[in-house]
Length: 83
Length: 417
Image 1 (tube, rainbow over the protein chains, first blue to last red):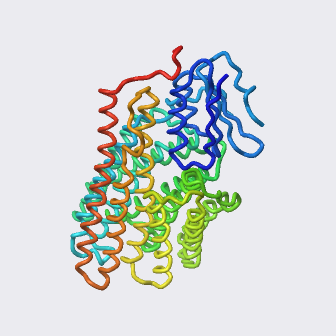
Image 2 (cartoon, rainbow over the protein chains, first blue to last red):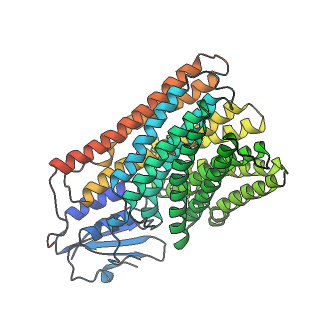
Image 3 (cartoon, rainbow over the protein chains, first blue to last red):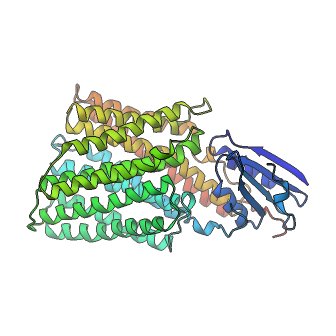
């Protein structure tokens, strides 16, 4: 699957959220959005949930949050997490 | 970790819940600015000064703080307030009417006004403080949510002590020292409710918004706890007619340490850009340090009050300029509106900077008025204009939201529905 990647760990509010939404608009069945963030972005996840997207968020060993979102409901997103 | 865990926008209150409080708070701010033209404000117990103080603390600060809490608790702390829209509307009307009756009661000390102020404010403040505190108590505590809990408990004590004072003014006889009661009322209000809420919010937003190093964990855990229990200890001592000024001094000192900490955090932000909200935060923290110095030097009640006011207003303006554009943008995107305005289009950064210079100009004018009286008028004008501009920003955000709802194009992120 094609990955759209965003490292938002050094971005100030509201840049991560604005850029994430722009990325989500470009997604299709064969792509997913991968974001690294220093906090769990609850508004983005609420928005993904509202739009019935497939998403996960997980805290990595370096304390960064890994957020993966795709419109494809069949795919297991855990497999794409980079440790 | 979230994994399609049922997190929903239904947890967040409708945008109008928050904006209603903010618009009313701005109108009370304009009213407060106009009240600054009244005579006898130098005497802090004059009806004019009491009316102005309560217009600022209840009309302005409580309105903005209630609105911000209705917004922030679901998002930051995962707290779900049942029937947020209906509940907030009742609380909102109670706060407006109660504040107006209380202000009237300072000019016309009639029992009917005391009773009406008590009923409306009592319902509004106790219902909000209890409803939010109960929900906060249930969740796994972060340093920020724990601080908010102590701030809400302080609000409860502030209101309770205020109502005792109202009853005393209405002729009820109590066996307590009125002066101590008054000191405890304003201590819980200023250093408990307002300062603790600002501290709790700073724990959450300074690091998140401005990419700064976090506050030390133990410090963030114990500061709100320590401030609250010191205020409570002072109240207990007052009931025994003991007055340890050292405790109040310690509370004020602890908050001053936090403001220095916050300034040092802002200085360490990773990006060099300085948006207006950082300037508002800086104004707030510096104002508190000046309040601390003026308190230590016993520089006069009016000067100290002005510094404390700008401590609260700096944070208030910073939060409005973050929250309003975010709400408009977020709620429209959540509903699938493709052409929702970006956040910087809802509240343009250059407007925020103009608003900052107005507020800063008001502070400088009030300070210069200690030497040249006329500058008090200039300060009052700038203060009024600051809130008029804030009202315009909030109202235009609301207007843009409604416009897109009516005319915007919808998109679907999940094309399979």
